Image (cartoon, rainbow, N blue to C red; front, side, top):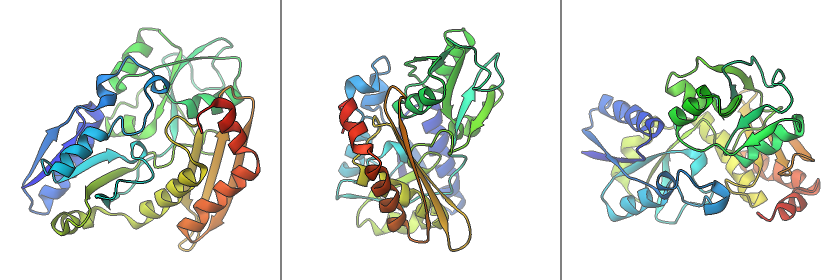
Length: 302
């Protein structure tokens, strides 16, 4: 029996059942335990008010450490860049679309939104980069699961919302997607679109059980992204975007962007190479040379 720990949101359960099905396909017996996290309990509080370190993972990791579950399925972008010593990433499955998307009932693209239109997002990274493109729009704090946000959009509380493509694609709720924003326009969060299978360090049984789920290309890319984030000193509420993608069998490209929260300034960087650690450090160093640290200090989140 393999016991999977997961949050109880619709998307988290989709992810857990996705991994469950693949493990069952390998002959394992599997059950899922739903664990409520701090982030789930505080749906009406902004990320900036509560902080984000471990808010979607702490209680799940406590269950993993205690042996109540054997593995945890996370959205990789929810995990801190440095895991506690007692845990490791047993597998990183193939990533789906990492881009952010514009979701709207009435408008066909971000560019078509009229001046003063309300745009809902809970992400400081998204808000900061979008403000740089369209300072004439009103950006509204927008929390809740995917269904809640879509309901609020349908009620007319905002004219558009910005979400991760991955969640809508996985839940087959793509009918209102109007635009997929390329990483050069809005750089995604490190690890966006990827899942993480977290296990106890030294748990050979689980390491062997999940090894087939690991995707080398995805692991390379998200490793580079998380190294860059760590080198920049960033967390979920620092407006950092980092995205790495494969160009050829031997080369990957990494893009980085750091924005001031008011959108007044964005610094961007790009590097190409074949070593994940080198790429992550290269893009972080270049962003810091361009003043990223000063942007962090100005918004008091570094």
